[in-house]
Image (cartoon, rainbow, N blue to C red; front, top):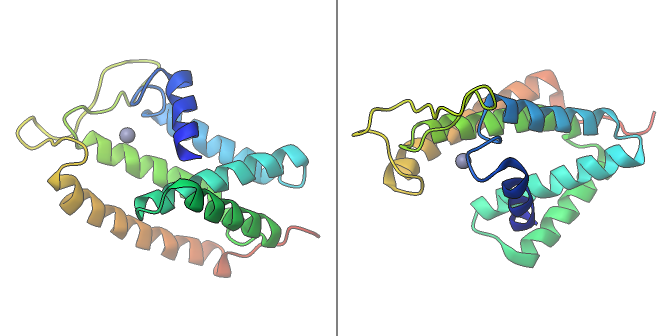
Amino acid sequence: MTKGFAWLVEHVSGGHRHGTHSLAGVAAFTGAAYAAGHYRQLLAGKIGLGLMLVLVLASGLRALKIGGHFADLLAIGGAAAMLYSGYGVNGVPLAIAAGTAAHLAGDMLTNEGIPIAWPLSRFHVRLLPEPLAFTTGTRPERWVVAPAMLAALVWLVAVVEKIMPGGRITLHH
Ligand SMILES: [Zn+2]
């Protein structure tokens, strides 16, 4: 599922770190999540939200080194359970905003940088000067970015719990 989606995005946006790695990209993903959640009573909204949840869950499983058809099955089951129960569904746009923004922050630390103002400018912004910037998948990523992401995740969970205790919403009124 994640490979298919990555292929599609790459061909639509013009390769990794183009349109998707900008503030416009964060807005597009967050807006799509918000729209799908807002229209989840309609079939189109359910399909959109379901697809998004499957992709997000499958990506999460991949990060835990669980991949292949088994992970797809788990992700589909998880997404169906979330859609049916409504558990955590309200938090999806916030989770996608935080996730994509954190991804951009991480990529800004690498020597490739990101075109943050795309499509206004194709200039790649990076936060660190050359000697400190690192290549994706190398040591600093594991020891600096991963703990920072974990801290961000803990903070996000605390925020979501504050906004929506229990993360529960009702699908049927
Ligand atoms: Zn990236």
